[in-house]
Image (tube, rainbow, N blue to C red):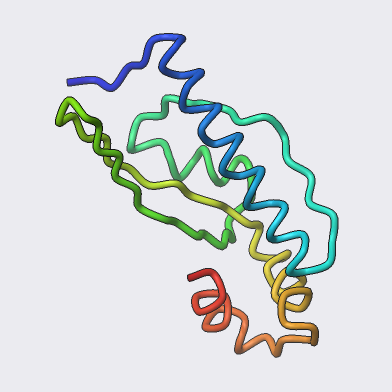
Length: 119
């Protein structure tokens, strides 16, 4: 069954992301002592087989990905399960980690440290 949301449902998900990423950006800004700018949330319906091409078009071939699974349980026993994902251009990941840890991160430590830090 194809996944479609009506306009009101799509707006609700956008608002949910707007609120949660707004709070996240404020905390992250404090942690790395840097300004964090956010755009408004977007919503895209992409066939599963096209996700790679979509991401490559946005960020190139090298991407750092941080994801968090979520499960919303509603009083009517309805459940919505998914994953919120943050994509970072891999070339910028080292700068992010340097700001987070306060010092330069050796190249061979970027991926292990990113995995640990993003948890």
